[in-house]
Each structure stands twice: as structure tokens, then as C-alpha cells.
Length: 580
Image (cartoon, rainbow, N blue to C red; front, side, top):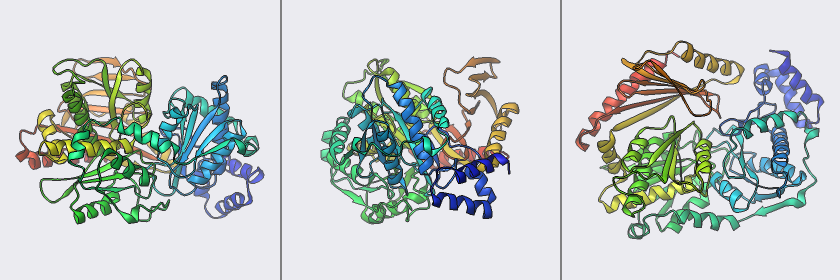
């Protein structure tokens, strides 16, 4: 173990840290040198989702000192950036262990630095925090959450005055400011308590009314108000606000999973509170079968991601992935906008646009093309979608946008993915489909018939600690220095290297510049429309492989056959990548 890690640990033992922290460090020194190294080998950095890490002692862990020092650095930067503005921030938190404690510490530090602080009294979702920043005219905000990560994690999402997560150059500059805060003695932990204003329910109504303004099918909702919807917050912050939003929209048969309505950071009924994992929705699906429900909705702990299950042609509830949900919502929004006369048929609708990320299914672009609406492509991370919304504010109208990792948003009043809005849109889309004699499942098959059968799969490799980080870097380096020539037997025709901002076209033998910020992503495209994208996660110790294939579906009777064929193709791609 390098002395630098020991030196950091020793500095904590000699520094202004409490006795409990120092005793835990001593225990690690005596009994677990590997955990000590992982805890101190680096500082947590602002990634695609701010700070996020396992809770514990050390510079590479989420704890009250890391939270305090991060907040001091953020406050210092905000005071410089908004020198001539009244300084105010909003703080919210989810159900995770220590979330309320970290939120209070964050509020105390901001308040001691002269900020007016709006602190939610109880847990509220990330999207409501985003909404509150602009609604209250604040210069920024912080959400204490680790989103869908396992219970050992917590995190710190920093937001700017536009209500969106921090992007370049602010993320880099904030990191520099945070690094200048090397000791707790530099943090103002107390002294401004009179600057803290507790928020109770006053933001809820404004947020719910804004969501209601997005409705496109109020008459259909009235007609199908008895639509049975099972909802679970997975022990998280959607527990009150999502059912309230659905009821305000007009649906009156919201069925709960009582065991999962309990706010508990240990997430006792699931292995992981991640709606991307089928096991997390198991209890909700069982409840749907029990009550013969039409739809299952599940939100993660901070209620920005949505997982859904829909009834197939028989008695089964089928889980949809993030790409499928985004495709359904894209198709519904554009169809209804056209039906309502907001989009011109057979023409370019240049005033309107939608956004997706580079690893999200191209099915969304195919749908948008049909309606004459531009679908913009951005880097992975919803903050890049909202960066485009900010750039186009007052110039063009944002219809909606999404990413494969179960995030979607519509409208411009929330500047992050929003599972509360998405829940309402999915329920409304189900009512619209029902008015046409279809289920959402049947509507999805219709989409595949019209636009092509796109199917995707995500495989993540977890590599923890210093050695894991080095291994991830080695894998990414190999994909650049020894590029693939084929994907499951099909010749590669394009390689997009977002780190070097370059596309290589093997058909024309030309190179093109990628006009996006640099990002550590390599994407391969083959001549049969297969796509493999590789990137390290910005929020977890993982490297992610995104697989996408496409086939033709001529009728709903062929669905099972083509589905199996595409699954076999995905299996081959996954097997090919397993060598890494």
C-alpha cells in the first residue's frame, strides 16, 4: 500500500475529526488494510451524478466531513459566480441512511456562509428539488441521494440556478474549489441557523399543478379513471407525491404495495432499490396479478427513474426496459401533439425538438423522424439533455427526452429526469391506447412493426477499488488501441470515439469530428445495424456495455419468433465482449 494512502489516513487521525471517526480508522489500520486503501486512495469527484460513494470514513467515502467540505467548496464557488445576486439554495433528501443528516449538514454549511437555505422538512424527490430551485429563484440546490444504488451508498447531487445538475465548466471548477478545502477546520459547520427556512408542503401544490399542465388527454383519463395502477416507491421518496400526482390527473384506482410504502434506507424488501432490476418489481407485479391491475409503476429512492410492467395479450405482466418506455412515451407525445394540431402532418416541425443520449435506442429517432421533429443526441447523463433545453429556452420548444437508464422528462419546468411526470404520462398513454382498443404492450408491438424491431441489453462489470479503476482504464484503452473489426460476424462500418471526438467511417475511409464534449465512450456500429457502446460509469465502480440490434417485424404473429432471433444475436454480442 502506497504511503500516500497511509498519510491521508494519518492526517485524519491528527486532524479535526471526531473520536468515532478516528476509532474507525484505527480499526481499519489494524484489521483491514485493503478497505483502508479503498477509503483513502482518492477523493470522491463530481461525475455524471455529482458525488456518490459507499458510506464510511475516508476521502473516498460518503461521510459528514466529505459532505461538509464539498458544500464549503460549492458555497465558495457560488459566492464567486453569483457575486451580485441574493444567495439562496434548496436542499432535499431521500430515504437513504444518513440522507437527512447529510442534508442538515449541507444546510448548516450554506447557512453559515450567508445563504438563505430552503430545507425540506421531509424527504422529497429529486425532480421536485429541481423544480423548487427555479420556483423559488435560487442560485442552486443539493439533493442528498445515491439514486438507485445499493443501500451501502449515498450521494450528493449539486444543481445550478437553472435547476439542472452541474455541467462543464462548473463541475471542474467546483471540484477545484472542493480540493482547496483540505481540512474540516476550513468548513463553516455552524453559525447561520437563522438563515434556514423549513419547507413543508408549500412546493408540492405548485409542482403538482405544473405536472397537470402537461396533460394531453384529460377526457380520456376521465373515461378510464378506474384503470387499475399498482405503484411502489421501493421505500423511497415517491411514496406520497406519485399517488398524489396520479389522483390529481384523474386516476382513482391507485393500489399500493404496503410493505414497500415504508420509508427505510435499508430497503428491506429488495436486494437493490433499482427499477432496472426485475427483482425490485417482483412484489408489485405479484400485487398486480392479485388485483388484476393494468399497469405497474415503480420509482427508485429519489423518484427520478421509472420502471413499468404492462399486461401482455394474456394474463402476464411484462417488464419493459428504459428504451421501451422511452419509445412508448415518445410515440404517445408526438401522436397526441399531432392529433391536437400542435404538429403539422407530413412537414418538418422545426420549432420543436426532443433529446436522447448516445447509448439510448435509435428507435426514438426513427419515431421522431416520422413526425418531422428533430431528435438531438447528447452524451450519457440526463444533465446533458437539460443542457440542451437550457440552450434552446425561448427559441424552440422541448417536447420530451429520455435515456435508456429509465429516465424521461417532458416540459421545461423540471430540469432533470422525472419519474413523477413519467408516471403520469405512462398512465395517460395507457388510457389513450385503451381508447384505441389496445394495451401498451400491443402499442409497442405496433411501433416495432412500423419502425423496426429494436432490442437492447445492458451488461455491467463491477470493478471496485484502486485496482478496479486501473482495470477499467485498461479495458477502455484496449478498445481504442486494438479496435474490433466485427460484431458477431458483421463487419464494423463506424467507430465513434467520444474521448477523441472522432468518427471513423470504414466505408468511405473518412474521419469526422464529433461535435459533443469529450467523454470516455467508444461505440461500434456494424453493417447490420448492431451497436455496441462501452463506457465507464460516472456514478458507480463499473464499466458498462450497451448492446443494440435491429430486425424487421412484419406482423404481431411474428413477434415471438423475431424476438428470439434478436435475443440470440444479443447473446452472441455479449459472448464476444465477455473476453474483456
